[in-house]
Amino acid sequence: MDFEDTPEERAFRKECRTFLDVHATRLEDVQVRYTRAYPTDEMIARARSWQAVKAEHRFAAITWPEKWGGRGGKPIHQLIYRQEERDYDVPRGVYELTMGMCLPTLMAYADEATLQRYLPAGISGQEIWCQLFSEPGGGTDLAGLRTKATRQRDGWLIKGQKIWTSRANIADFGLILTRTDPKVPKHRGLTAFYLDMRSPGITIRTIQQISGDHSFCEVFFDDVYVPDTQRLGEVGEGWRVGMTTLMHERLALSDIVGPHVEDLLDTYEELVEMLGADQIPGSVRNTIAELYVRAQGVKFTEYRVMTSLSRNATPGPEATICKIVNAIKLQEIATLGAEMAGMAGMISDPDFALKSGWFQEAFMYAPGKRVAGGTDEILRNVIAERVLGLPPEPRLDKGIPFDEVRTSTSR
Image (cartoon, rainbow, N blue to C red; front, side, top):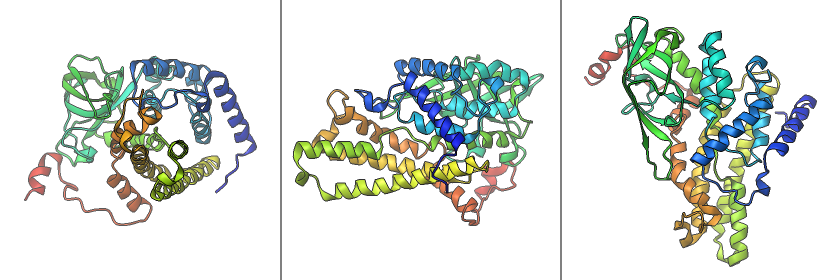
């Protein structure tokens, strides 16, 4: 593991800091640092503006080719920029799906004309994309989806329902995975498309969450027509397209937005000053220390990713490991932050709560981070099978045509 930047990486890091110092404000200089994690209308407007600024200075898609507004940089450069941006008050949570998952998938499968139409509008913040994968009753079994796409001359009619689709209510376009052939095993009968989210037959309903967020949506498709020119990959190869998207998703979600251990330390110091150190249970200090150790583990695991990227190697499962640890750590930080405030920990009003209610809000949305991008259990299976070499779990539906799965597995 190499902890030092190369001279070229050091120069790029300096360039990132110069850009951010000119166009953004450091968190330490922001009066109200603890802002809501979910996008409000104001945050969406700020995100559009910030995306345009990053695109103008070629920091919006560092690894993309220059002709699409990128720098032709390496993944290590993208990671360096992401590290530096963490220290600045910039809007997050709006374009991560667009830039981190949807458009990279489009680049992998779409033709030149399609890329000329959609990439510039995405990178500049003019258009937002969403990912239409999860379905009711599907749980973590993505290949078990039931939304159908039926051939109709030069196009397809899509009928079904998706759920937990982030930002569908503000998205202009979406990637969708459908079932086009139920007569083959489930992984082989899928096909991917992209579509206009304002197409006739699409109904979007937001889902109110306990945290106050309403950016998750359920989306209904009632014979929505999609031309075959909007198909990604070959018919029946949707699983491969979906895995391309999910590979990008787990890397993007490994860096979770929310309170950190440093925020617990700040809160602890405030409470000691207010109440005295003898009023704070020793278990609090022990828990903060344990969370700090885990945070350092994630930090150094990220260094392993950086070392691999710097050497032009393909990283292993580090992003999956970081995602699992970060999601659990966020939940524990939020819980401890609220508990440290005692009875006042029940107050979530940002005008009165400690740290503007940041811990309380995170307490509500943190459990969802252990589901988004792959549940803890699914990601542990990935690590068990691909890292530790353990045998895969038995699958009763293996090799069975999808339309026979229910009757075959219930015998």
